[in-house]
Image 1: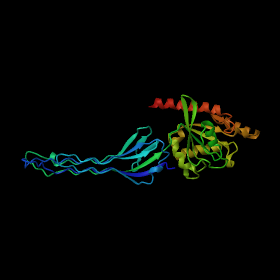
Image 2 (image 1 turned 45 degrees about the horizontal axis):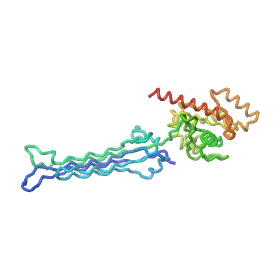
Image 3 (image 1 turned 180 degrees about the vertical axis):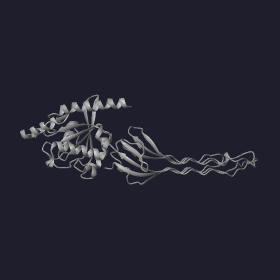
Image 4 (image 1 turned 60 degrees about the vertical axis):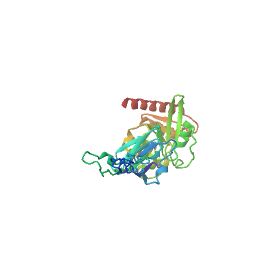
Amino acid sequence: MRDRVAIKVRSGRGGDGCISFRREKFIPRGGPDGGDGGRGGNVFIRFKEKLPSLEQIRNKALYKGGAGRQGAGAKKHGRHGDDVFIDVPPGTSVYDQETGTLIGEIIEPGDKIMVAAGGAGGRGNCHFATPQNRTPREFEPGEPGEERLLELVFSIPADVALLGFPGSGKSALVSRLTRSKTKIGHYPFTTLSPHLGVLIINPYTSVKILDLPAIIKGSSEGRGVGNYFLIHLNRTRVILYLLDPFEHEGVSLSDQLGILRREVSEFDPDFSRKRELAVINKIDLLDEAHVEQINMFIEKCDTVIRVSADTGEGIDELIAELEVLTARTEEEGSASK
């Protein structure tokens, strides 16, 4: 899966203007009638539904608009160059690679961004006639196209992103919440690419939940597989940290939460300002010692929900909390616009 791609775009050159003079029977000295050149082709990036990533454009280094045609006699305008359209999935941000400036985003159906404008066509000699010069042999050449280096970054639009250590049960929880068919296994790194499921709360309310590959200590620096996909937190509104009470590789609940938060913050400090929720999974397997550890952990946290992805225990409470968090975020988003 490709979520970050660098490409070069070049719009088409404009067509040259034409030098021509009107020549008709009985009119041996007609005036200039050279037409204008056509505009060069533009380059656009546009919305395309059902594309899973930027994989389809990564192997093409240059996207080039067509050249405009030269003008002709009888003031005929040259044909415009063919426009080029680069199809990307919803959730794609387009940056100028040299300046880092955000050019625009592709989110909704119909979204389209012109990233390179075609060169203007040159004027023909009919524009240069004057009382002093009735037979001008001047014309304008077409303007060159625009060339830019772009970086496209794709992040899946979702309401909630699910993060956790390997074996914490993320895929099982998403499957329980959304009835999605994500791969589930009792071994590390079951999820190797993001999976999106939809939690239907009622006929009018739904929550998109993104299951990301497991995060481990050092993911933001390149360890494991989760670091490649942290970019998808860009469009999520709530981060759900799923914790394993059986202390994955000896890492306590507090340390798990701290590591996950730190990896997110080190990847992008802005992500640490998103709403978050801590959830402890596998409560159906706990003994008294683990229950006591969990209670001590909960006393130090604001909101922690205990669930079992296998039995469904605590799922209703989790759904209710997700509804509140995402609804509150929507209201704040509307107020900020």
